[in-house]
Structures are given as structure tokens and as C-alpha cells.
Image 1 (cartoon, rainbow, N blue to C red):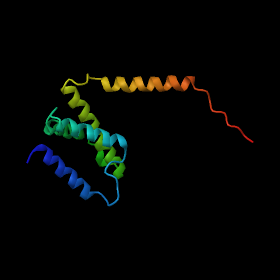
Image 2: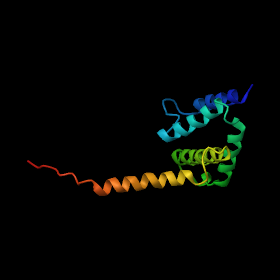
Image 3: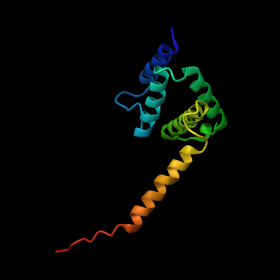
Image 4: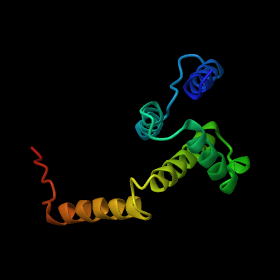
Length: 127
């Protein structure tokens, strides 16, 4: 059995454990980061164990899930760790520079602020 088979078994176990008719991912970004990592592993950019080790470390560093009172908060904590592990993995491969994600987020925020500043308020017509 290879790493991809291990991953498939883990997904199958997740699907069996979740309540019937519930979504595997609660938000689109969770599915996207999951797919990004799975595709990068499948394409041979890095072994699953490299990402997995970083994910475990990220979960251990942010081990405040015990204080989470809902499944939603636990899931958010878990996928936040996925984001951290993904960023660390991509940095280790030299695909992104340290701080690049933060810079991109700030660029997007600045552009949103710029657009909002030039938009005219909507006028509603009352009849």
C-alpha cells in the first residue's frame, strides 16, 4: 500500500464517520486547500508524509481544540492547521516565499478598500 492509498483509506473513514447527508467540508476554502494538497502529492511535488508531519506539528502548536465547544469550531481549528501546514510545505519547496500569503491577503484587502472608497452608495427609489 502506498501513501495515496493510505490517504484514500483516511477519506473513506472520514466519510463513514460523518453523519448521513452532511457535507464533508463546511466551507469552499476547506475543499480547496484539501484538493490543492492532494493534487500536489499525486503530482509528485512532495510525499504525503512531509505534509502530514507539518499538519501534525501545526495541530500540536495550536492545541486549543479542547476548548472548542462545537463540531464547527473543531473543524475550523483542523482546517486552520491545514492552511498552516500547506503554507509551510510550499515554503519548504520554494514555491512561495515566507510572508507571501500575508502580503497577498493585504493586497486583496487594499484593493477591496480602494474599490469601496470609489463606489457610490446605492439609491433606493420609493414609490
